[in-house]
Length: 394
Image (cartoon, rainbow, N blue to C red; front, side):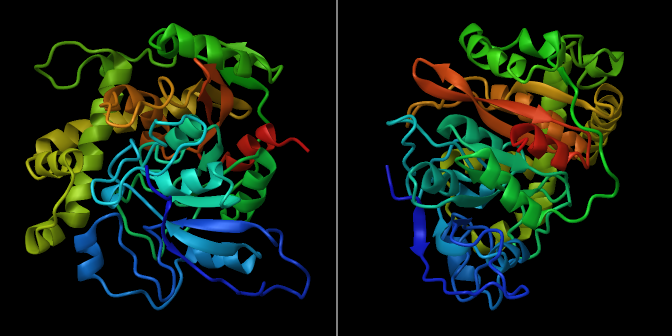
């Protein structure tokens, strides 16, 4: 295992407010190595990216906002290569420590940010979440984390992966710090949302969860003291088929496959030209995903977009005002370092928020064999504040 930091940073930026201390005064900030930090190279988890890009002259907008609110940057942190992994092991830079699960991965791609916070080396870990890269590390490391509504936090000055899925959020050790930091980052909501009064814990999703994880996470759902509805999330026949000629598959798997196609398509659009020109060395998993992405067809993308439209409609229908989806943030505890994770099982739990552009909050829920597992709450797009208020009601 390795240190979570790529580079330590001496930050003496003073709050640029009205003269009073900022809301994040005294809190230490670890920055995922996808975000620009003025004068510090952005490596995106790959040495070739570092070689082919000049150091930025300005902070990424999210970094600037957190600094202006009083947070002190302590370092840039390890990320999985170009953020395209959920494991937290970087082929070039190693695996940051997970103190909540020694000998196991911290989860990715915001691995170093999660590790730094879990180790107590930072109070706020700035990360990104495209397909679960904040929610999964939060679950594995026993942390709080928010994937915000798509486009509610600026990604200006951050390396993209799949732009219609990419979001920027934070990881913290407690719900109050999460709420403070996200209040700094979130833009003004388009409209107010009613408080969460009902949790949807759909049987068609929970029935697929391992018994040990169900037993650890469900009590956290019930502990909110809200109405819990177990009716199905999926019930539309369009989710029965992945392709017109394909055998029937479970609806959640259909959504997962659609997400995988669209993410890969966008990742190749974002980085294909650079890959072909610069010929970077990737670790095996990332290398295979980019190779497959280069082969996708427009017909596959069109089919996946239809499924995505269906998920958007389902979220609108199943998660009206005052309702949040409650499902595990990951299928189980962190895998051992060197163990192949079940990426498909993970993405089945994280893809709903991504496909719908919805906010997803991860919070500690329980233990499986003394290892942390988290609960994920998903609200309708724009409902970030009501999720944060549910976790931190004071």
